[in-house]
Image 1 (cartoon, rainbow, N blue to C red):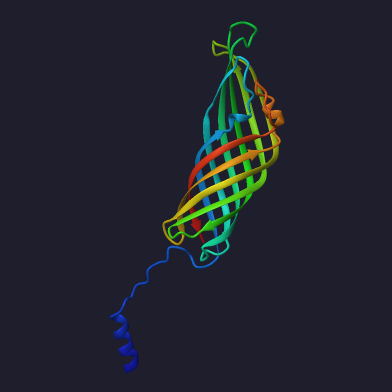
Image 2 (image 1 turned 90 degrees about the vertical axis):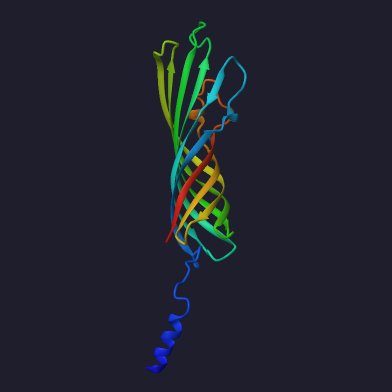
Length: 224
């Protein structure tokens, strides 16, 4: 009893709290959600003729389920199932659209959902956790085209959709708030294949059968 009492007194005089670690010390599952900005990649549009075109930025939102193989290593592999919704609009002005000097005004509303499996390498730099990777999967893309004259009256509408292979390049970083929570920001270049029937709707035509997007987003990540 005396030995235990002395040990208790010695312990009471020492440090009694344990500081939480910034990064977990084992492999771990995580979930995350993100939202941000995307831009339709316009360099596939044919130049020339008497058309002018303007491409608007759009929105992005997604969720991820991932597995970090070894959070203690400086460089470690990460696998991630990534679902992303994207939406963007394109506006076109077409002089002489109706056979006179009367212009036509086109609005193209395009949305897509892509589900991809990402393979990434993540680097342990204390609270910062940079990563790079590549992903591949499939997408469903749908569009609506509306044509109006200069009075605003609708002169025609069309809808279409397409499915196909998709892939992306990824670069970003986590900022660890604790062993469980992190904020992150990343950039993705996304390529959506198999959109020939959609790109043919464009009044200028398209030089490729694919659409691509640049996406910048921010999000929050929770590690189990």
